[in-house]
Amino acid sequence: MAHGAVLLPTLTPNTSPNLLDSLHTSLHTPPPVARAIITQSVESVPFQRVTSTPTPNAWASRLPEMTSGEGFISQQQNRQLGEWVLRQIYHDAPLIDDPWLQYSLEQMCWQMNASVRREAPLALVVINEPQINAFAVPSGLIGLNVGLLDKARNIDELASVLAHEIAHVSQRHFEQRSDEKNKQLATQVGGLLAGLLAAKVSDGDAGAAVMIGTQTISANQIAAFSRAQEREADRVGMQIMAQTSYDVRAMPSFFALLNQQHPMPTKRLIPSFVMSHPLTAERLSEATDRARAYGATTTTQQKTADYATRNALFDQVQWRARYLAKLTNRAELIQAVNNNARNLQNANGARLALVMSYLDTREYAAASHVLAPLQPMISNLSDPLAVMVAASLDERQGDVRAALDRLTRLSRLLPERRDVKYALADVYLRQAPSRTNAQAVMDLMLPISRQYPTDLHVWQNLTQASEQLSKLSTGSQQTLYQANTLRYRAQVEYWHNDLTQAVTSLNQAKRLAQTLPSTQAAPVLASINQQAERVQAAHRFKPS
Image (cartoon, rainbow, N blue to C red; front, side):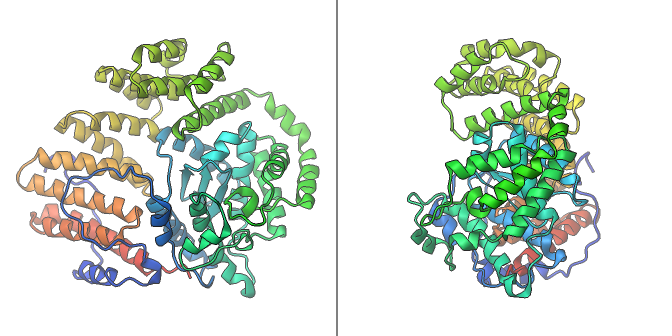
């Protein structure tokens, strides 16, 4: 067998031969919670990334019925719940798909999470909505709106919101419910998803909530955390910030700013941090007093080199997010670049965003001119985002070899960074298909798929690369790549919550795999069975 032909480790088949057939049948008669499933079949067509933004009506029609909180309090169901919410978000939410931004925010969240939880977070998502909001659900699924990145004034303010959300998870506020309040948990998660949709409703009126599935959402239902839980999340959140060297004083100051600029609405359904985490005067006063006790320590921390590095990264995160979400314009970027012309080491985010803006309009000379002052840190690979932007400029100007060389050197220096590997893979996939390029993508992506199976980007890349290899192969080797292409496509469909389509792809993969020699077929069939079991479990799971 050729190198790389068996794409996943061998697994022992442990499902019945008829599992896919029975699952396919059951998925065509879905229970209420599975109404989001799209039941048309998947044809064998070339894979394409989903890039369109869901419409509000499409989002609304797929929201689940949620009537009871029974079952939520079992820790065993936490991951199922987290994955269920993640699939809804992948399917319907307008997401910012940028591996560098994703990686940078993950590192920040994962470090804070590790200070209070042994379990690694499930995933992090950045939602392309301008409202200031963040949320977390059991299993550690962390979400934040791009509006939070836009409005936070420094790294500590961003950290304060994320630490507060992580505290809700670590203290199991979703699960610590008395019997009479258990039903509120279902409403809270339903409100979370419905709140995302509500941002798309232009007038924000609560009457528009009728569009949101079968339940009526109100401000009280969305704001399901109790006052005691909010105060505890503030307290634990400050502990998390202190343990990870963030300035705890940012929490009450940012909350006070939010309360002043975005007071709790009484007649409008506006998904926001203020709505879901009511900022009472008592709570703000208590948080302010508590933060004073940390003052001396955090002031010292602000003077460290690490703190300067963090704020330099925040500058990049903020301007990158604004650029990607179209929350800035070229005039604002030029002004910011001029204001920070003498502070390239700690404030180059606007400059890099301006370069990307010029690349979008094919103004390569202007892009090169703006990027030129950063050449020293690009050459010594000390600034990953600057190197990645330089590689984008190389590729746009037709120098693909230079782009690949920059990214390869950066990946060798920082092998733990999957965002760099994604950048490399994307360059390979944008070139004319070749066995060398496609296999390079496979080699980059397969380790990531095992370590980060909830990352949709990796399955999209594997699908494209495997499809290219299938078209460049013949005989049983081609059949093997075709089967694996369908398996990877099924992963994309699973995470998009298209369970019926995932089963169709797995059935097609199974039929192909059964024509292979037994030594080739066994590991592929085992993997197909494992995926089918996961789809079946997702179909059975009812968050109610």
